[in-house]
Image 1 (tube, rainbow, N blue to C red):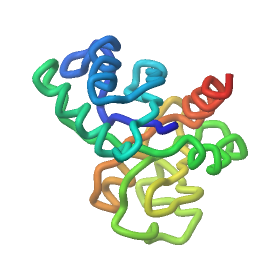
Image 2 (cartoon, rainbow, N blue to C red; image 1 turned 180 degrees about the vertical axis):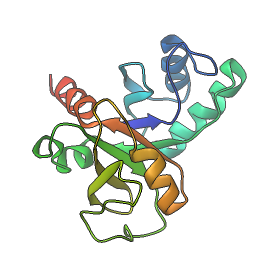
Image 3 (tube, helix red, strand yellow; image 1 turned 135 degrees about the vertical axis):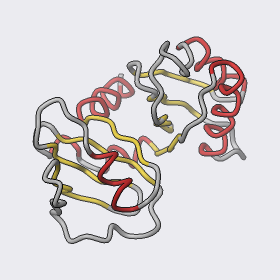
Length: 169
């Protein structure tokens, strides 16, 4: 099982698909067991043998363009990889920021940028676990994009944990 994290996709809003359109795009690309989690562009799915999950998700983005003008980044991670992050062990207010970085995270951890909005508690080439310093603020994406120069997208740790729990049922 894989999870696609779409950047700047909010179901039903301008330049974003409806849930029906999103699920149909996955089905049209051969995905099965597709589950849209919340309205923020988080989708669990199984991909056909012989096709990479990232290629499938990229093809979904291509399908969505003519429907709603969506054209942004999607990052795919395996459910087991997400479980192994141990998000439940981090403090409240943390979020998972995903990116395909140019290499290992370049700062010593924990790292608090001069901007003072976040502390990066853990990180690798494909993720950062970020503690926001203000409630209900999401600063992982802009901080990681600024520091690494690559597109990123974030989800609250609670969102990811609820998805993992939902998939275990």
